[in-house]
Amino acid sequence: MDFKSMLMEMAEEQAEKMQEEAMSHIDSDEFSVMLATKINEKVNLPWINEEKEQELFEKVTDVVCDMLVGFFQKK
Image 1 (cartoon, helix red, strand yellow):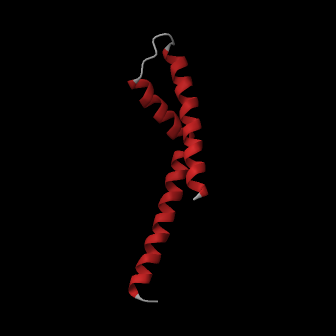
Image 2 (tube, rainbow, N blue to C red; image 1 turned 180 degrees about the vertical axis):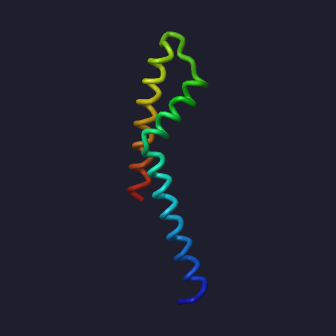
């Protein structure tokens, strides 16, 4: 195996490891809640109280995160 091939193999292994770690982070409840909280801080729905807004954004971010993980796991 030549030097270039070795470097490419190492880079691919590292990229796969990073993707797995990123997907694990995105798939975590902590990330979903943190993202929902950030969205809730920026978006105000005047007809819904803050607690219900947070619940709504948590459900939305949970679905989006699940979709992202599913999308990247298929590749």
